[in-house]
Image (cartoon, rainbow, N blue to C red; front, side, top):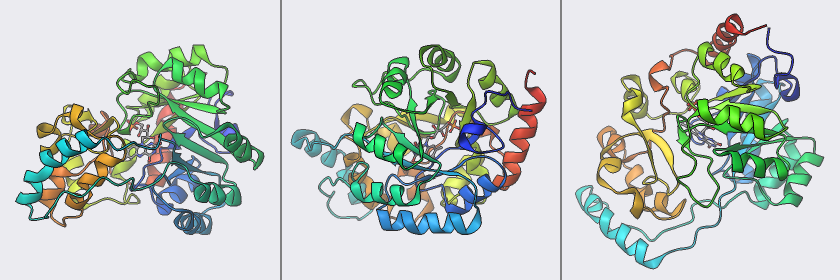
Amino acid sequence: MWPKNSVAQLLGTAHPIVQAPMSGASTPQLVAAVCNAGALGSLGCGTLPGEAIREQIGNIRAATNRPFNLNFFVHARPAVDAAATKRMRARLAGYYAELDLGQVPDPDELFPPFSEDQLAAVLEARPRVVSFQFGLPAPETVQRIKAAGSLILSSATTVAEARDLERRGADIIVAQGAEAGGHRGTFSDDLGAGSIGTFALVPQIVDAVRVPVIAAGGIADGRGIAAAFALGARGVQIGTAFLGTPEVAMLPAYRKALLGATAEDTRITRVFTGRPARALRCRLTDEVADADALAFPLQASLLAPIWGVDDDKVQSAFMPFWAGQSVALMREMPAGELIEKLAAEAQARMPH
Ligand SMILES: Cc1cc2nc3c(=O)[nH]c(=O)nc-3n(C[C@H](O)[C@H](O)[C@H](O)COP(=O)(O)O)c2cc1C
């Protein structure tokens, strides 16, 4: 049995477990498998245009009629800093020469923050949940999404961010501790402010807001889920633990690197995209200083040609293999089985 006040009822699921949105890695197959097993599947749509989102929603709905979550980025539009760009292009030039890739390109925005095009796809699909990373969109956009019948989620990495999200209309807040894999949700001015661990962050956010809180970061099995509930969370969001499922989209080099990895192999770094994110340490994170990174997502655009090289060694040296500190707890099994296991393990430990 789950506690009566868990977010399961709100989410329309059997279990108060959210499979984290993972841009690039989450697939309609993963989302559907998670939903069919009784949890909330999430699709990372941050980099996708409306048409691609519609197609992926079609694939999800062909495989499940359960509630799901669509996730978007609401970062500030980056300003190009000419001096910083010149420095970063010079810093990366050696890699381009080594890999025979020609000139380092000019920075490019790659994808816009949550757009009208994406909003149209959301309003049409009316998913149960719409979640945002790096804050929330404008108040009128939040209102339109809510009026269409979707719940709004966003991640906080500090108490102040959680209060801000509640004031701006978030229905549920994800308290994302520094253990988490992938991007920090941090949206306060100081990007370094949000590096508080899950254990310290969750109870403080629970005390600070009235809306339900979901814990994220470092949770990979029933022990972590039960601990999150003991800290006052009413649900969990889990990412890294799903990287061992066959339903995720993943390069073979990434899959291989994850299998032997431990917490000490992960780093929070800005060198991949310009925003702090936890990934496996690699040649790029060892050699390029965080302080030099361009604004999100311009930094990624300077690296994109390197990421396009179809070679395991190059990929392992330069690509973001996102992973959280619980990476060694990852289990290789189908997503549906993982949900059943997580739910059974957690329920056996739940205080009644
Ligand atoms: C591979 C990967 C990709 C991620 N991509 C996104 C994303 O697109 N949007 C988002 O809101 N969070 C993203 N996250 C962060 C998760 O939402 C979540 O905070 C995190 O996975 C929880 O910590 P855990 O990895 O320790 O379970 C990503 C995480 C991982 C591991």
